[in-house]
Length: 99
Image 1 (cartoon, rainbow, N blue to C red):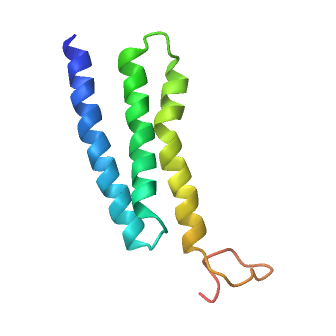
Image 2 (image 1 turned 45 degrees about the vertical axis):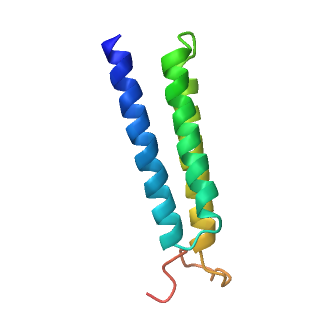
């Protein structure tokens, strides 16, 4: 019972911190719709915590995948929005052109 309460408190604090961090980063690197990405990442994390707390038969792999889905999708969007628009040069790695 005490462990569930600690997980719930951690989940609430971590969800708020995750929302703030994603929103700040999305504004910093100029990702479109920062509020949407912050809500998506924090929302899927909160659903993962909720599954852990309220669905005792949920497999841990499903809980972890649910909690990480928003972060992974934001990471993909961040990578796409920060990459160069120039075509790749043969024999060079991305982000290392001209260095």
